[in-house]
Amino acid sequence: MNLKERERNLRRRYGITPSGVQFFNIMQGGKCGLCSKLPTSTDKLVIDHDHITGRVRGLLHVSCNSKLAWYEHNKERINKWVMK
Image 1: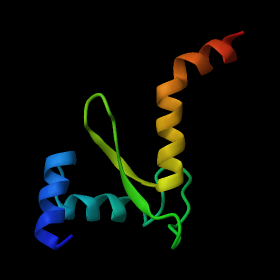
Image 2: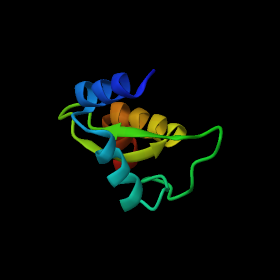
Image 3: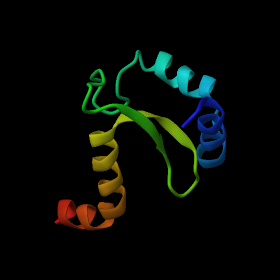
Image 4: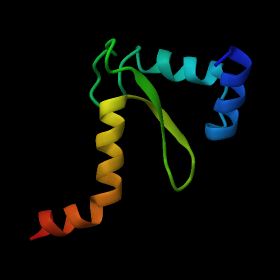
């Protein structure tokens, strides 16, 4: 994907520019917004967003983003279990 396509994709999917992604990266110190660890060659940072509002929340490892998405889709079940 070339730079123009990436920029269009970021705007279309997340309403953010490449400089917006850089802003999150700087604000998070280059680390994952969830676990606060640096990215690795096998676990890069990706854009995390709220699936209901579409609002970008920050950058997360692919693995952290997957865990967060799983939790969000199952939090009602989890809360029922925790509240017992």
